[in-house]
Length: 138
Ligand code: MN
Picture 1 (cartoon, rainbow, N blue to C red):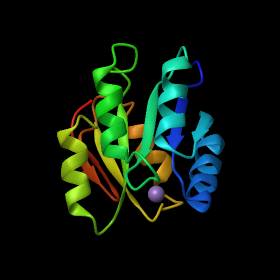
Picture 2: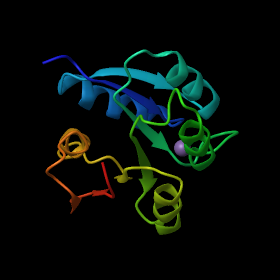
Picture 3: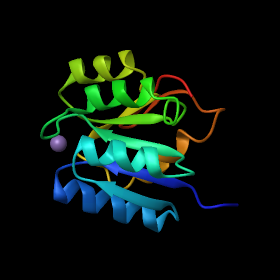
Picture 4: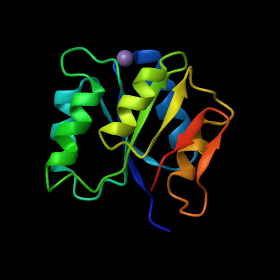
């Protein structure tokens, strides 16, 4: 099976490193952006991008606005976006779903379940919620 490519947009270096390591161990190809503007550029310029993991609190443009931009652009609107939200921020979860995210994974990143949670977004038969994630639609 062809390796899937995931773009992580995350400004916190520790979260970025952890998410990257966990996804590379799970044999995903990982692209990285530290802010929304760079992430949008990468999304537009990457031929086969399978998923975007989108931090919500970002310097400059936030993840909600970045999702709006990506969902408005024909080149990027079909790429599933999964929000990375802080556990306590229920409003962020609601806002993420409203602008078209496929669901969310809550931080702090759970090293044991993170890659599995991400994988669920590629499995159409799995919906709903599990430990640390929620799938709205696929
Ligand atoms: Mn952040």
